[in-house]
View: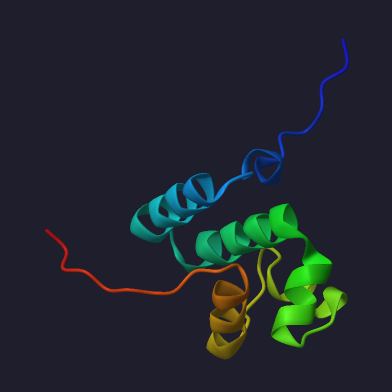
Amino acid sequence: MNTSKFDISEYLDDVEMVQEYLNTVLEEGNAQEIIVALGHVAKAIGMSRIADQTGLSRPSLYKALSPDSKPQFETILKVIRAIGENLQLKPIL
């Protein structure tokens, strides 16, 4: 029996799914999990497209959004905006 590695980016195929995924990770995850989640979304949308919109190279994006990376906040903001999202704060209840 052959099994394939689960790739969440294959399931992030509409705006609502992307938003639900990112909001869940933002609420429950740590900084590294958020970075990796952004990488999954960028992969789902197309790393070349995100690279074009951010002005970063594809290799730089893969490196910045990989596990154990420590990208600059500016890079994270560029990626968030390139995937068509924005950051908003709300009170913790």
